[in-house]
Image 1 (tube, rainbow, N blue to C red):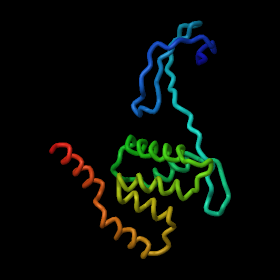
Image 2: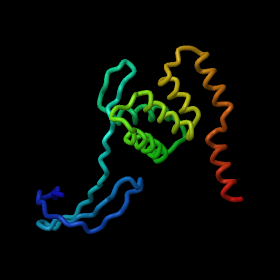
Image 3: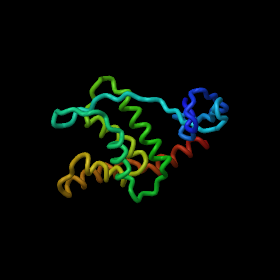
Length: 166
């Protein structure tokens, strides 16, 4: 790692620890040439499959598009950025572990929907309305009827707490 102050390649690691997200390592370094100290953040570089869109064309996997879609779904909802980051990490991990070198865009959408529904039903409905291209009220009605049959994320969390305490 080069020193950001003098450009020397001679640096040593003083301290290492996992970052809060536990998917990266934060290192405290010292330059052997100028003595300056600085932090680095190391993350693993994942390789994603190419995305096959619904029209048959393909494109490079774009993490920003996934992040943007999820953030829009959770806009003005009571959810922390840590929860969103955790959800995104699960989705990105699923995508990076896809068994083929090409992943259909529908598989990415399904992965996102399967994670969002566990966190917030309104965000799920928002994402589904765009992803499934709702064009009338009946589309909303059908998915709301399905959501009403399922327990809410809060009920699932409370059930888990009850099971732990028993």
